[in-house]
Image 1 (cartoon, rainbow, N blue to C red):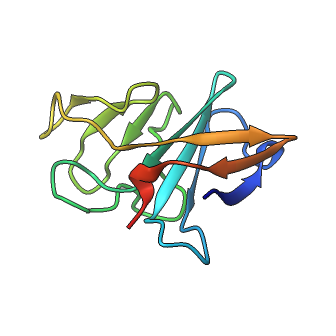
Image 2: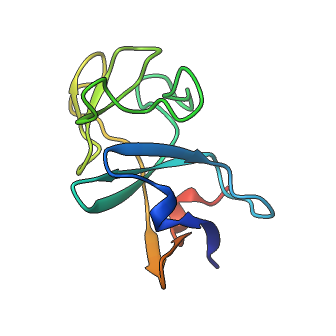
Image 3: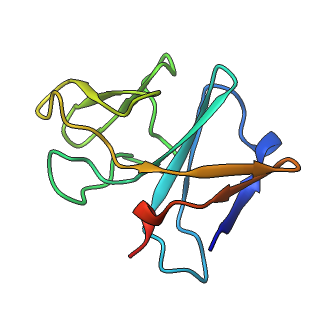
Length: 115
C-alpha cells in the first residue's frame, strides 16, 4: 500500500514538511528535500520515544537548512542518514520512511511507518 503525500515541486530544496497521511494507519512523518535528494523519516526523536521533533509546523531543519533538529532535546541529525551527530542521543538514528516519486508525485511506501 502507498499513500499520496504531495507534488515534489511543492517541496522546495532545503525544506522539510510534515505529514500524517489521511485514511491510513501511518504514523506522523516528515520529508526533507536537500541537494536534489528527498528523504522521509518518522516524526519521533529516539531520545524520548515518540516525541515529535518540530517545535512548530514543518520546523524540522536547522537555521542553515543542513541538519534535522529535535527542538525539544537539542539533538542534531544528519539529513542523509538520520544518525544523531550531537545531543542526548548521539549514534542513535531516526526511523526511515521509504518514498517513491511517480510522475512528479511523492508517495510513502514504507512498512516502517505502519501503525
